[in-house]
Amino acid sequence: MPALALAAALLGGATLLHEQVPDTLNVSAASFEAAAGFVLLAAALVTLLRGRSVEAGLLAVRSPRGYIAALAFPVSAGPAVLVAAIAYAERIGAGVTLAGGALALGLAPLVSAALPAMGASPIEAQRALWLGVAALLAVLAVGLIVGGLRAV
Image (cartoon, rainbow, N blue to C red; front, side, top):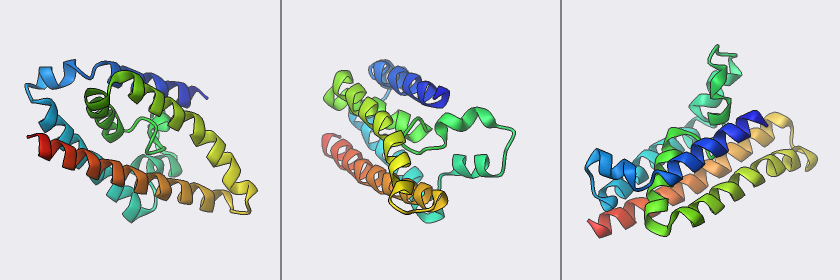
């Protein structure tokens, strides 16, 4: 659970800084939204093509970088998701974005526990979860890209 708490703190912090980040970078909200979409799409495609996230691969080989446990699940607190949270908070508001992030973080352990109960091995369940989340992130990324490019 410490990894989940860290993920929630990172996601909440990024969401609450949604106005400061684009201003600090001196970019418009629309440009930031499109760029966030491209970053999120790239991360989702890596996960879809490899079958797992880069961070999860580091954890699987017992990398000394154990602090990245919160980032091992692509929806929790990876850099691409944090950038997307900032973009969505700018578009739809911090409250709605925080609620969506809390829902995703709350459902992740439940789905992760339910998949093995449905007969999948833990490795198959984990892979299915990563691929499903990556596909969802790809769809969200396309939405950010289209919305950002329309507004520019």
